Amino acid sequence: MLELKAPFRRVYAHAYHITLSLRRDAFRLLDVTLWPLVLFLSMGLFAQSFTRDPRVIGLVVLGALGWRIIYHFQMEAVQLYMDNYWQGMIEHVMIAPLKWWEFVLGGAISAVVKILVIAFSFLLLGRVLFGFTVRTPLATLSGLLACAACGLVLAIFSMGVAFLKRGDAFAFIFAFPDVIAVLSGVFYPVTVFPRPVQVFAQILPTTHAFNLLKATLGQAPGEPGMFLATLFPWLVAGAVFTQWALAKARREGKLVKMK
Image 1 (cartoon, rainbow, N blue to C red):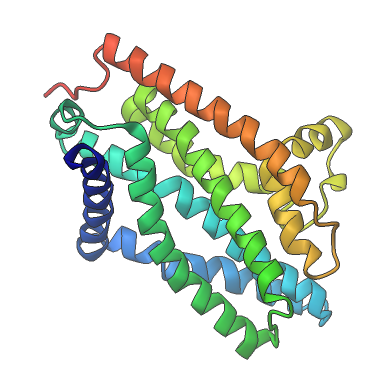
Image 2: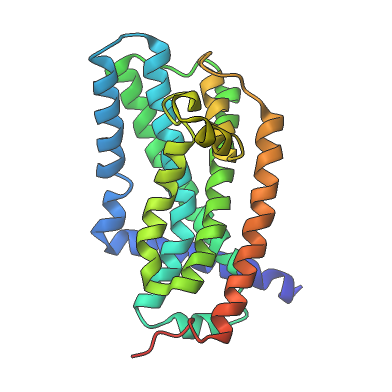
């Protein structure tokens, strides 16, 4: 029973660590307040200056929210690992009976809390400033949960990159979810891309997660089957890659920050 409870305690400890960082670090606080609102308002006001079509406004609101969900679910776990690395504590953390997926789940708990704050502000401002309301709550929630699942998959890949590249992984960690969101047609159909990019976009689960959101606005076909069919291969590939990266990092001594 104690062995069963230990992983859950470690997951909770990671989530609590992130919460403390939010209280102490202005960077973390801005990440759930100012910066999401800059994205939301800049895109929303830009779209409104050209059209009052509620489908377009809805696409901006839900697309921006889905994008932030992917970002936070991808970022939280890896940023926690990098904080431990930069503070010279990672060797002590990794000596413990710790699994990489516990980092990911701890980050996911923190991401849920942050996303609830962001979702409230986005939907409230969407209603007040742009007149947008969610017409199909269950379908919209399904699309948002699909974005969260994609963020977790990206987090798994990013953990592997962090194991291998250490401090040099930070630029990749920040750019990764944004590049994927752009390639996945967050605010537009992927048909705007050249044909080879379109083919690649179709194998990304994020493309089909955004399509689930667009389907609630009549802007794309929602295909849950395609989402699941693309999500699970990426999930398996991410787990295999990260397990390999961790073993390689341990062999080469990359889990220790030399002082």
